[in-house]
Image 1 (cartoon, helix red, strand yellow):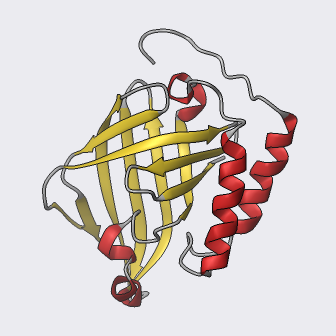
Image 2 (image 1 turned 135 degrees about the vertical axis):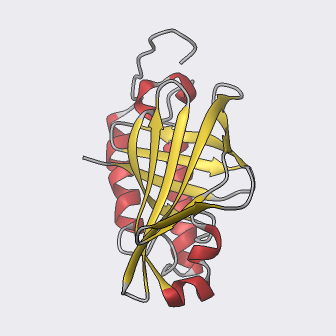
Amino acid sequence: MHGRIYTCLIKSPDSSIRSKNILIHVKGTDRGVLLSKDGHREVSDVAQKLQKYCVSEPVKCPLIFGEWDVLYCSVPTSPGGGYRSSFGRLFLNAKEMVQVVEAPNVVLNKVSFSVLGIFDGAVSLKGKLKVLDEKWIQVIFEPPELKIGSLGFQYGGESEVKLEITYIDEKIRLGMGSKGSLFVFLRRG
């Protein structure tokens, strides 16, 4: 970013073991919905331990770019909003949640779902990434686009998020939202 090429040196082989450990805790939890309070605490503990292995300036690390599955959020309604609320999950079954970070500054978020198991749909957000400091980014999103079947439209207004990148390696990215939500991303492919 900023017109320079940066390399990322992962600080310890132990971090690879710990990043696999966090995957064990979050897989199969419906992105955190099915975890107990103790389960969320365990994920948080592993994430805190991984932070000490984070590269010094993760926002400059080219590893942030790519396609990422959203595997976990400590506040399960943060990714997807009302679509992921208890009420929303009665009607909408989330199939996948993906975040694409493209150089130099584009972020695309997409939640694909099924409506009552009959219709496929998706809500997408396109945003512009702004680096705030060596660990924090801000993304300002355009109004969301909702698509159900062949029908699609934009609704609402712009939105904004701030996220601290607390750990990154070739497969895993961890982030902490400005309101305290922990996110676990897994590189696709």
